[in-house]
Image (spheres, rainbow, N blue to C red):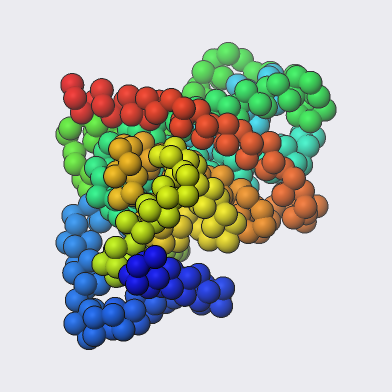
Length: 440
């Protein structure tokens, strides 16, 4: 092993050890990068990190990051989801497990508006959870459905995670978004199929709504469909105009922010208190993302300067792993890290290493971005420290224990692994739509 490979290994292991101290991720990554840059190249070494950070700061699509975060928080407080769930409540009530299926559909709509997992979790736990528990749904079924459904937020466009991946991998966000459509709905279909089969086998898990609760004139039922128009309009104004070529990425996010704000005003929810809360939360999360991304770019520039990509490639290939073996090992490493880190931390730590290697092995980086995102979804639900597990515990009533939450996600994690295997076996599921659109 060369001296540079030893230094790269030492740098990476130092970062992992420092992460165990519980310090902020950006502080750990940035400090390790700064120390090694000075040790290796002297004071002038910091220029490498500066140049990497500066390239990001002048990248125009970076403006979308705080805007999409704003949309997520504004949507969560606008009341749109409440009306939408009432629509689902009435129309899906006669189906065994109907409210659980409706919750997955609701999460798909929420995901198509905000692109954040946490927003879907907030909507599901505040609206769907009480309704399903009140109607005798099994608490493990309920919590599993909400956690799995909310994880779709990082897959279905406009996905913030795919925007971050595009930043770091230097890949077109439009292609990544289109690549996420079919895999996102593939996972949603797997969830819905599981719910239907499970509830058919054991109807006690999700009782059908009493007839008196869902009986209403057809005309009134049709009027409820209006609740779906506003979310669809927001989705069209954001993603629709973008893919039609009328707006670019930044403009589409700005249009989405304006339309969502107008929707909140229309719902009479746009008070001064709400606006202050949304802006403060948006600023807080945006700054967190920026500090972490800048630290990661600094780390990646030093790491790449050591030839770490070649060292990792040789490590995998010289130990008998073929190209597909390397891909599988990468995904396993994401799942292991996801037990302790969130998706952003995972992306910024290893993406600068993995993505160049993926390209060198002849794989499509757009397709790999979808594999990464699905693996993040799995990691969100993987004990002991899956991100969604603790969000669910914080939002769930006291009768739902952490043990219940852990057990509830097992079938959905298995379904996600199945979905990941399907996407690896059939890359066209991810690549067909972006290739069709951009090659037309």
